[in-house]
Length: 259
Image (cartoon, rainbow, N blue to C red):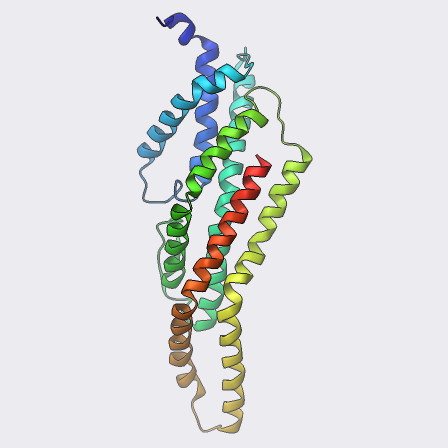
């Protein structure tokens, strides 16, 4: 029979708040979970449910001591939120890199003004960029990447237990910076096949305009680059999907090793 006085003690309540705060940080930054259309109430209740499941495991394996002041509790909650947000941030870099890469060759196509609401970020982005973002989201779900994130948050309670100690070692910070820096290499890998062909097309159109000055090259190049860009997007869709799957697995493996 449960002893309610022990179960609802101050220490257990503060421990549950710390677990919930770490999960809240994850849900605020992780891909899919931080998606714009998901209601805030759903995120809160899902975080609370997972925190309720993790509570007995964390309680049994941690020597958490309840803080005796509001500043100490605030410091602990800030630390927990930072850890959860860092895990989700590292995973969201994948989608940021894909969106940056697609936006790069979209501008080269001349579709930079084709903006629409992107539900995955809450801002405006080209429609073609949203298509690739949805593709990355489906790959993310198909690979079971959300389970990797929950495994990372679970393992973080072992490597970074709840308490006053802030265990963001220089090695962890270095790895997070390295993962953040890979955003540009990821974007370049997505953009370079189509961007390179469109760049060569621009060079050829420039030679054509010099050879045939009477031709209105602008009126020719605009629909040609849009048609060519869309055709190349369809042609490279499968290789890019395979490339995204490899990148997502690599990033998730690194995140699991860090946390």
